[in-house]
Image (cartoon, rainbow, N blue to C red; front, side):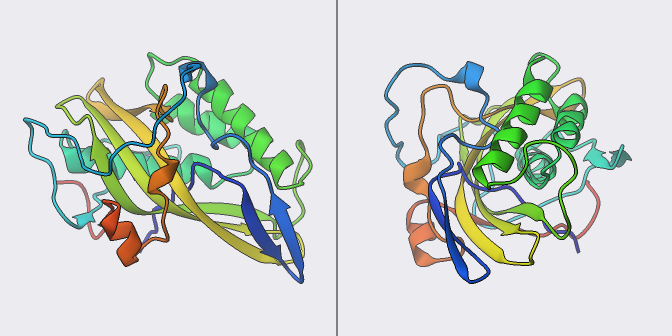
Length: 240
């Protein structure tokens, strides 16, 4: 059974690495596209989901798989809100669970919205920034077992229409350093999805002038539920 990962609007976090307490000050959200940001002071939105004329899920969503693989990435999701949520989780999993800038860029060339030509470069740059914030070399191969993995645990929806959906993902990230020390943190990723060319494409990660960090909570807790989060269940079969 595959896990879907997608984590945090990366915030300052105290990371326990081995016997040390490492404070990683990560000043910008991983994967947020800087060209979508404005100078406005963002306000934390209400956790209440947007109303929409299209059918939207309520409660736990079981993620569906894409219809086919392309260079190791699932594509071909159904033109439904659940399809958009599933694609958002899978694409974020792929780009937020790598410390390889070239890999992140490759995923965006495949899964990104063609209208946003800056996505591959921006994702690669964000991965370099993440490596720096984790006190890792910003280029070259990393010593094993160094790894970073992000998993989407819960979701919310905003601005849902037939061809555009803003999927908020509450995530858990795990960092393993080259000595095998492990640290975890949680956060929120706003993932904008666009139906384009017969499939859901990732249009942007992050909002122009919106800050959703006030919705952060430990996944699968009453606090998370009180802030509007609903559960994601692992894929059990192919897309309908």
